[in-house]
Length: 281
Ligand SMILES: Nc1ncnc2c1ncn2[C@@H]1O[C@H](COP(=O)(O)OP(=O)(O)OP(=O)(O)O)[C@@H](O)[C@H]1O
Ligand SMILES: [Mg+2]
Image (cartoon, rainbow, N blue to C red; front, side, top):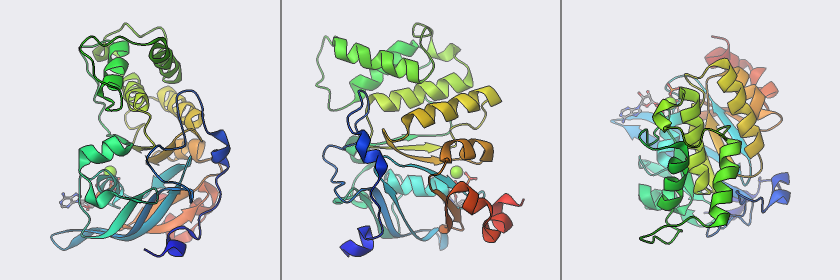
């Protein structure tokens, strides 16, 4: 691939200055992000029996960026995440993770192992286990942690769990069964479980769907705390929430499988085409 095409338009990301926080590392290990991009989708098309759910989609995400993706139902947002995570193979096009990893050649587990974590809409926590155990299990599922028969948490690992508990607003609830948490708390726990594995890229598909207003507001706070520490892609229909987390960052509008517009929330909100196909409805 042409390097200028792939990276020429990428700008230095201020988030680079924040390398090395205690639980998150921006600098992906094994992922070459020397040109600043964590993800580069190049001319992706996904056809389902001739119907193009994704149509020549090109976009990139910088290291440490929190990118919001919006667009009408059926725009291809979830399908795009399916391509990134290896669930769906594109009919054509390439998906680069960093400079060198071609995601279209990897299996779903290989992609997860390479450092892409995905949260689906429905919370998937271990309901019969406590909050703490869920986070501990997530750590054990991390392939980089050497499995041992008698797994004992080091004080560092214990500290990390405590830090995540605080982040996901579940300090003091660590001994509750996950099944007894509210819907919003389960969603936060699942985000916490993904964070335990220190993903280099986190994909969240409609994280606040079904949440109360208070839970939605807290989720926005949570994501704002993660800003710059992880590269994150968030798909949402809740525009108040998107405005809250997009701040001055980029928002991408998908429509009929392609990028319709890209810019700050204010820019895309004032874009006639975006108003016509989505926001004006
Ligand atoms: N496996 C499939 N087979 C056939 N068509 C599919 C398949 N998966 C998705 N589609 C179609 O592709 C289009 C894009 O779907 P997708 O789920 O990606 O949209 P979306 O932007 O996530 O929408 P929403 O906001 O409703 O979640 C839709 O028209 C959908 O019906
Ligand atoms: Mg969807």
